[in-house]
Length: 118
Image (cartoon, rainbow, N blue to C red; front, side, top):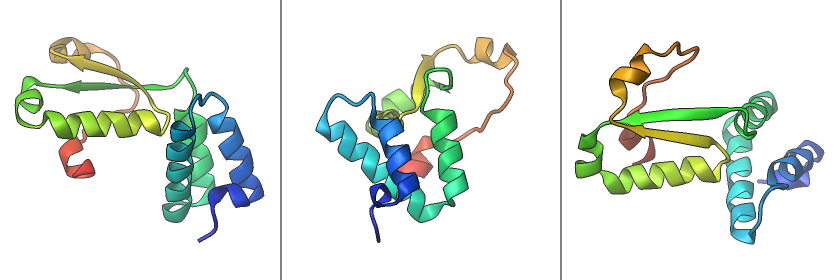
């Protein structure tokens, strides 16, 4: 499989996405994620993902309860680390479920992170 950075579009996306990278490890992680995205999604979907989720104006609010802290902290940590490495700006909330449920949410997906990242 060709590296994402070997195509013209891949080079443009890689350069735009990696401009704020300060270390080679972050660059390597992001290149890996870009390659993964190109292998499982169309160019249109990859561009859309990078456009939506790799700027500071777009972020995800993640809420979780105490059960995950006591039963699956390692999985939560790995999941949050992965989301951060792919460039998603995260706001993590614990113990604010009732308040967050009252907010107008335009788009929400309820995900069990353990299922996705195990």
